[in-house]
Length: 337
Image 1: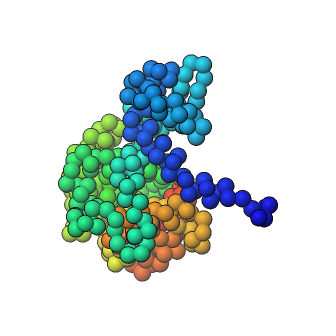
Image 2 (image 1 turned 180 degrees about the horizontal axis):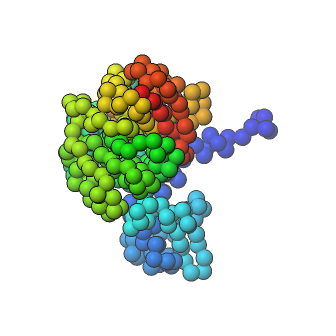
Image 3 (image 1 turned 135 degrees about the horizontal axis):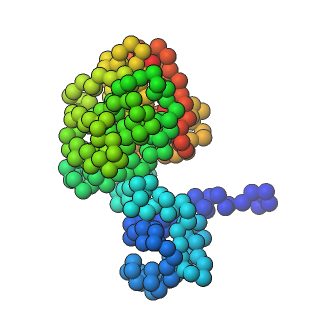
């Protein structure tokens, strides 16, 4: 055996679901929210969470070894990161995406091999049931979990867009597929001169209204009910689509970009953002695996490179385009009409 080679990365990746499910279960049972009040002993924590004596110590110590908890003589505590991002009582909570991963994505991904061979979704549609969005929007509790998940995975990028895009040149915007409205809320929080609209299906309205009221921006944001398949996108100086285009096949992607172009005035901007794949398709593993997730969850969705999106924007008529990194795997593609 070549002494310069070792199987560590192969084993760590092949068994990565061990660590993943350990974290997902901790989120599911509310461990990090429980510890937000301070350190707890093994016995008290196990009792409050209903953990069996056989499993409790190994489970909690595994989370210590993984870097998600600390342990001292006072007991177990959150790390600064888990305290900020995985306590359900904080606005910074991003565990919604992990809750959805646990309840929904984790079981479906066990069928990835079949998806790779058939090109077909592996969710409810596999057995003839309705598609992803029909399932989510038919159940208010499931819809709320999904929209919270979208806020969680998008929050860092939303804050970056709110602070770095040249908003001083504009006064109005529309967030297409607004979900809870976190992107719209972050934009008006950082730019008091702006007024915006969140455009989404009518079922989203009460969740949007509740969220923006908590953030104190209800006076500057309006919800507009509608479907971007059957309605025009409301006109504004800036139109944003966050984690939208990757849900759909290529003709639908191009149709949505064209609808945005038609709704913009001359000089207006379209901002598309998600886990944009690097043009070389060799670095943004998250974006590439997100595209595999679209394979599992949708009939035609896929993620794409910045160059792909720029080509579609130019085909629609946008005259100036660029790609700008945001946070983590996310980037935005901007087109100027």
